Length: 395
Image (tube, rainbow, N blue to C red; front, side, top):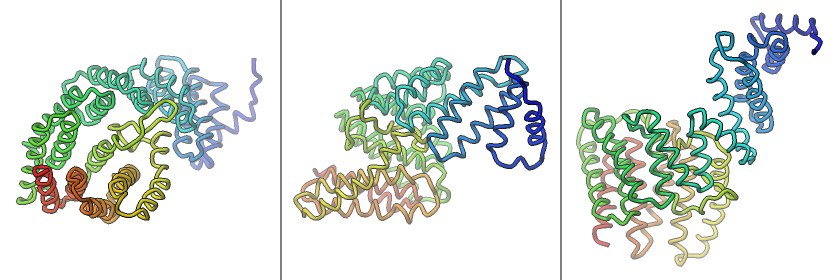
């Protein structure tokens, strides 16, 4: 039996009773001491303190140590009134632990933690990890299970979008469009009674049109674009929602999603972004995706030097850059328009220089149109989408 250091226990109690507890590490150390003598009372508090400290840390190695210790501390607690919220704490600790493992590239260990979470009824982290490795069909099955577990009566953006993205990644294009079309139907009903939902409906319709095109269903794609244009015209000619940009995360998620075809195929050896998921959640694959920016910028500069012959490739590379810029900062309202307007303007300017390439021009115009809708500039958004549709109609 471990000998108790009564002086250390007294110092820990005095520290925790003080109004100014000082350094967070000292607080964690105090809970470590007291958890040895009174585990039922102090192990839960130690877990909370460890997780809080990990959230404040900027060192991945430190995060791993703290979250790993938090998991072990939760496992030492017991069920019942003396250890409330044990299951919730375990899930929180496991979430933090798997993020730390993935951040350090320890994917097999991270996936094992995600599997434990899935067994506990939270399969989203495992679905995300599988999608990062290109295992889209497995990820889609987990997405479907997660939605069914919630009852399936409500169609939420953050449930349906990853599911559709993973089905599309697996080549199940008709199934993917069917899933996303269900989400659009729900948003359409919401927008009928709540005009503030119209911008979201427009983004979803445009993304659905892209999915229809990918599935070879041109008529449905044209119909979706036409519906989006009509909604934009309604907003442009009325006193529709002008202020606020609280739904930037949805616009950004769909725009980033639209760029997957230009990216290398994901695998366990070369994981990539889990498209369609909440892009604000930090992950090693997300960071690596963004960290490709300098190389892409250098490639774009080299293509500029090559002249007009490499212009189509330059347009595609600049779009890959814009996807990463949006991923990095697209949900921050501060100076949003100022920061991103040049990116989308350049995309259109470059595409206009192409001769006989209506698809790239229409894509650039559509991208800028949806960005304008995000800024609540509905008149130019309508003009750009109308031109994009006209370009596609005469190809």
